[in-house]
Length: 363
Image (cartoon, rainbow, N blue to C red):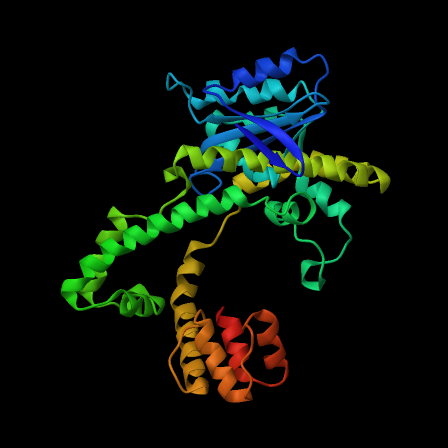
């Protein structure tokens, strides 16, 4: 298949083993300056979660190509003997870019084994390039955010998130189907789904024992759908798009970094990536007994804030009920706010509104 982003067309190829991409790269007479790499994983835990898909991309004057590959090869070989080819690929180019590279280093280490991520000596990060390419203005003050799709929609292609939207649509429909089953399970108890949702916002402990048991059994049998469940024909273009946008983002940023004479800064940041990886993988010690001591006190503090919030508003609601909060402030000010975001709550709090400060704190 082919994917066009920002007017550039990439050939997207599914391969069983990463060595196919290595052979292609090795045969090129003129190598690309960099390749881009991305993983799709089962979750965000740096140690416990695993990648189930990977992708690499590059471009030269004559081709733009993406390879998407599974965690294991066709013979179910161990990922360590499959994904390790990225180390060989890294030796053929100047840099291996990802977006938020340290996370992908963790996922790579989880697949290949201890020491694998640091065996690649030329990791680089698109986020670093973006930091020095954009003006030093925080997003809060109108500056650019560094999220890949946000950057891509603004600077590369307004439809950069089209395949992500397809993935999210599938997940939404899957969860909707799961909730129909929950609704059927709840029916004998006399609980409707809206009544259940409202009660769950106050915490699972507030549910009646029979309803709670139904919910827990349902959630165990029908867990929240994740990317691993999405059909491959939807996932492949989604994964491919991320390495394409990373490639285009690097291509876009390199001239700006050169113009601003910032490669010295980038060199220091790239040399720091393995150490950041090592620190985040090791983590830091925590005082478990102190956390256990704090837990009930924090819960009590939250309940105290919620009680005060309900008292000030004259009704029971949760901080996630945006429309209800709009109703409250429409009654208080005579004007319905367009939203109840952090900026609005801060403004009201600065004007002496105690309720806004509590909502902001609870959020």
